[in-house]
Amino acid sequence: MEKYFSKIISYIFHPILLPTYTIFYIFLMPTYLSILPEAFMKSMIIIFFIMTFIAPLLSILVLYNLKIITQFEISNRKERIIPYIVTGVFYLATYLIFSFFPYKLPPAIISVILISTVSVFFTLILNFIFKISAHSMGIGSVTGLLVIFYSIFQSGQSIHLAVLFLLAGIIAFARLKENSHTPFQVYAGYISGFIIGLGSYFIY
Image (tube, rainbow, N blue to C red; front, side, top):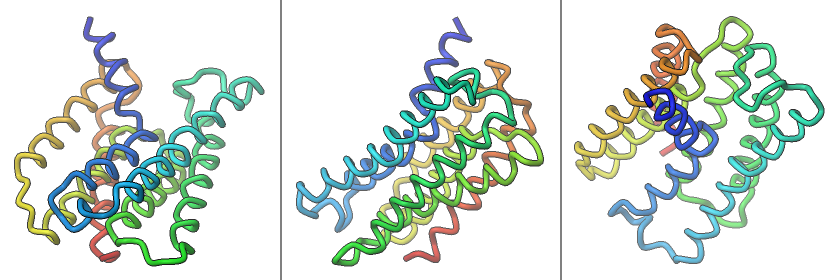
């Protein structure tokens, strides 16, 4: 039962889904972003979903069919290199697309894709040294990013942060329960991601 629960958690909070969750959440927060045109918000969410989830997912399916990777979970450290590179390219392309928009996008939107991009490439670099938890890296970067978001907009969402920390613990438990990572790999991923997320301060 615990392994089944862990598997579901790992899928629901897969790293390539987190950017879409984050941008959707930010649009719901009581800031100036929530009063942007609905059509604009929907278009942003769709772009995030396609470029940071659908495109990487389809790439993984192609890599699997070409037998470049042997399983969808990509538990083998060496097999993670190409999927990380491909995912990073899609994320970087999204950032560049946003950078060359005809009008300047809000820093909060730029921060989500830029921090996500940095997290992917940093995970790639660490992967050459040791296997690290991309799930923990992902939720860590989201937490760090939202800490800065809350402090800048003074939204005082302490309960939301508490939920995020709890969610990080659940994700860590899931990855450990599946024997996908060691405690060190999970902690290293979360701490690294959190620090990267705090770097969003310099985007505002």
